[in-house]
Length: 89
Length: 490
Image 1 (cartoon, rainbow over the protein chains, first blue to last red):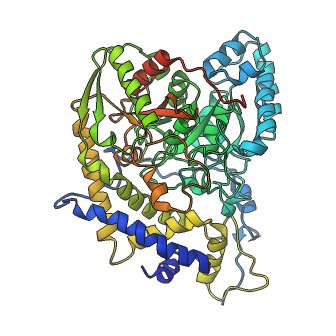
Image 2 (image 1 turned 180 degrees about the horizontal axis):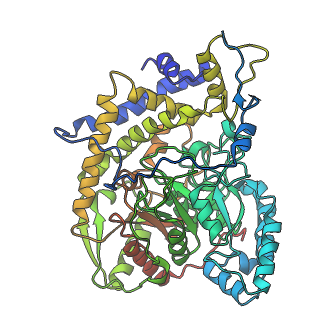
Image 3 (image 1 turned 120 degrees about the vertical axis):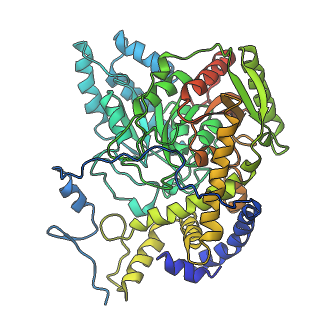
């Protein structure tokens, strides 16, 4: 595994120690995962959710909600009703 | 007060109904136990600061005879993964250290609607990723039976709190065994409901197609009662079932005549320790004595459950955890000294500092499994095998009603023993992950003890939405065993 590339895709800075430890561990983890290659899955539809519940749909209606102040308070930095980020370019 | 701390919800309700005890006295007793033990056990990340005010408000209701609700006045702990409005919700992570929930999860709301008191938020592995409660940013949790051992995970705080009398009951979440395994390690009852029974709204997502919240309690009846309180369709979670919710706690049966119990032969391997085997064999004798027919069933593909589980869970987690970017909430790296040169760096540094190692390991794995060129071989293949595993279970449930097995191969292991070996740690989930992959209801009920005095649970699994049968079998085992041992700290 090209761990630096995957970390980049995942938007995740790894320390040198983490990068080294993970590279070693992934070898044995992926090796352990390899076993499923032997299962015959020809014509098997992938299952992404375990029950056959018909998904429930409701009307898409706007509702009053009083939590917006708390939501803004949870942000690292805001300006009025907006989330602020430091300049990055 | 010690007898209060050892009481079940049913016993506490009797005391409250007959006015032998006030809600505030109960709250005070549990709070006292938390204050006494939390510095050692570390079961709670935060305690509800308005607890005593809320309890006193219930006192006046009790005086007027207006204390109503299935959990009125019962002090509970909630895993710090389920939002309760106005309380901190950390998910055991630094990245949510200062996050205060702006709304309440459906599960928590249902408990509050029945009059429950929230004692506080229970410790857990970071983002529920772990089997030993050693990955929490807020420190390890210790097993109340013996501090050298892990309480299990990821709902380790929720399990330890019940075992040590720091809550009458708690809520945990189970993605691959995270309720059942710690319940087994701590000697309590833990339930993972059928996927779709319980709303995931307001619960920090780990792997959305596997996550279910469930109760952790002293008795089977309490577990059935809490399950019926938290279950039900929720317009805020479109994966919840419209299925009616039975009053399981009122229909518990000890007579198992007519019931077929399946023993999945693949779960009875040489890896199981002698003590665990003895406890499981004893449970098999009990269900036979109570009239059930015991048969062998076969699930040939469950040997692949752990790899399939980790492929699915890490893939879903890598997607779910992409929301933690330092923009709208949660931790943000300090850019005042060294500004980020790109938006990618802004995200990467924030996430790199905010997440712990186990979470990073799983995000990387999941990202890799979903990445171009590997998707078919890993994620898609895992989803195909997942379907085969589920079909195998459904087939097996044509010939039996409930499956009985160990929860894990051995009782709790020592802290530090497996934390540096992910494959060994992940293998611990060998008997529990398939239940989540197949979306089935499962539970752990105390079955006995190892020679070192560590608790050992029995795992019961039923077909989709057949929780009643599973509760009946658990109830018959509990009633026959009448286990009275509690940890010394209680």
